[in-house]
Length: 67
Image 1 (spheres, rainbow, N blue to C red):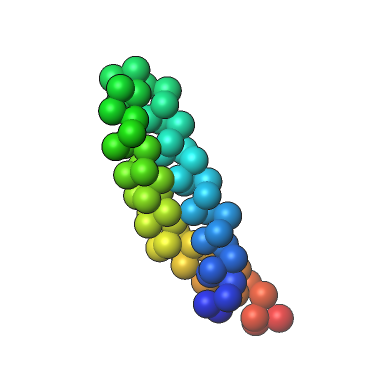
Image 2: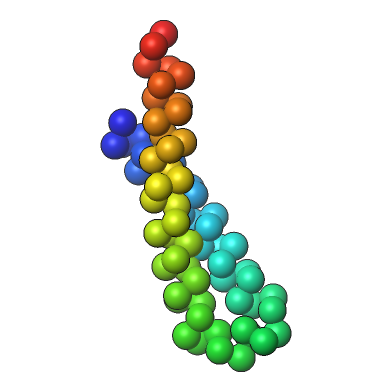
C-alpha cells in the first residue's frame, strides 16, 4: 500500500503545491512577498498531501484488495 500512497502523493502533492502557489500569485497583498511565500506555500501543499494521499490510497486498496 505504500507504493500506491507514494503514487497518489506524487499527483496530489503537485496539485496542492500548485494551488498554494496560485493563491500567492493571485492575491495582490501576497504577491509582493512572493519570494518568501511561494516556497512556503509549495512546501505546505506537499505536506498537506501526505495524509490525504494516505487516505485515498487506503480507500483504493480497500476497494480493490477484497476482490
